[in-house]
Length: 342
Image (cartoon, rainbow, N blue to C red; front, side):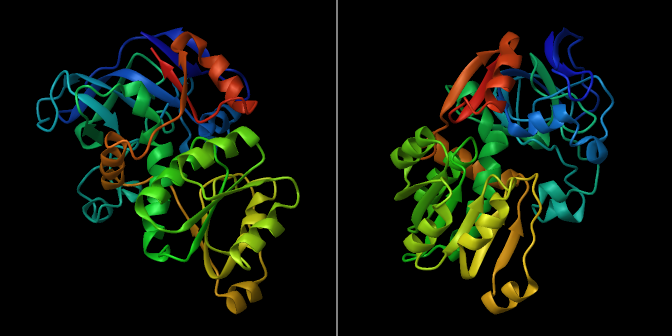
C-alpha cells in the first residue's frame, strides 16, 4: 500500500510502498482509510518536536485523524464488523486501568498506543491497524473524508467546550483565539451547547468570515489592537478563553483577555505561559490544559455532526499530494482542515 512516512526529522516525508498492516491481537481492527486529517501536530512531528516524548522508530507513517471502513477484525471483536463505516478515536486504550474505567481515555496507564504519533503507523495510508475500543460506528452513508478530522481536531475542541459548558450560562462571554481547523469546530460546538456570546479572534479575514457564518457573534482581527478590543467587548475580560494558538506570545494575550474568575483553556502549544502569582490570587483566574478527548466526547460530537450542527470545512488532497497538503497548512493556506483521500 501507499503511505506517508517520516524518514528523517526536519525533512519532508516521502510516499512509500509498504506492506499492509496485519492483525496483532484478538481485539485488533484493520481499517481501510477513507479520509485522514492533516494536522498542525503533523508539522510538529516532522520537525521532531515529539521525538523525546513518543520516541518512534523511523521511518514510520504519520496521520492521527482517521475514518474509513472496517476491513478485517480480530477474533474477539464484537462491536464492529467488516464493511462498517467508522471514525477512530486516536488513542486505542486498554479499557482495564482506573483511568479507562473512569472514561479518561487519554490518561490510560495500560497498553494504549497512538497511531501516527507513538511507535505505531498512522493513517496517512491506505490501511491502518487500530483496536475495537477506538472504533465509533457511523451511519453507513457517511463519507469518511467528511468527518475524519473530527477524530482529533474535533474531539480536542469539543472536549474543551464540553468542560466549559457549566461556566457558559446566558450572559457570559467566550473568546476563541484561532478559527482554523480546531477553532472553527469549537465555534460550532459553543453555538450548539451554550447560550454564551461567542467572540472569535484571528489574523486572517477569511477565517473570521467563516466564523461569522458558523456561529460567532463578534469577530476581531488580530492586528495588534485585539487584546484591548476584546476587553472592551467583554467588559474587562471573557468568562472563558479558548486558545488554539498558544505560541508566539498569544498565550500571554489570552491571559490578558481572560476576565476575573475566568478560565483560560490552553489547546495550542509551542509557547510558554508566564504570569505573576498575584494575578492568580487577586484575579482568581484559572488556566486549564486540554489534550484530545474521550471516547464519549467523540460519540457525542458525531451525534452533532450527523445532525448537521457541527460541519467540517475541508480541502481534500489525494494521498499522492500529501506534501502539498503539509506545505499548504504550514503556509496558512488551508481554511478549515486538509484531508487526504487515498
